[in-house]
Image (cartoon, rainbow, N blue to C red):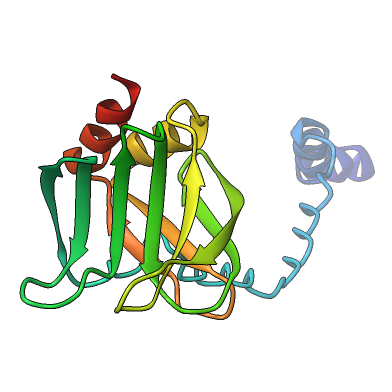
Length: 179
């Protein structure tokens, strides 16, 4: 009997761990390691914008408007010195002449924010050396200059570009020629 009694006394000590082992859930696998972050080089900053005529400095000067027997005339430059650029309406010839300082015939580029066109430029007969391009009053590039966003450029092959503000004097000369 002793053996039964011993077995009954020891049974709870043996059964309790077995019962408790049955209450434990399935073993959980350890969480997967997060993948190591991929080290990427910092993006290259964009190249600084190239300075262009739309963002650069204007050629020093101011526009003035006058009218004479030939028609309207807009002059750009510093007061007391020769004009750097002139836009003239010749009402008799029904032409608009755009002149700038220079002495060599070449290509004159008229650039506005909406586009550019090149014209033949020839020396003028005057004491101060100028070259001029002549346009019809209905040339769409004249409207492009008049309505350019703040400024336009007059380039001449072999010379520094002239960048001027698009002030009302320009449109006034063009309108003088359109009648």
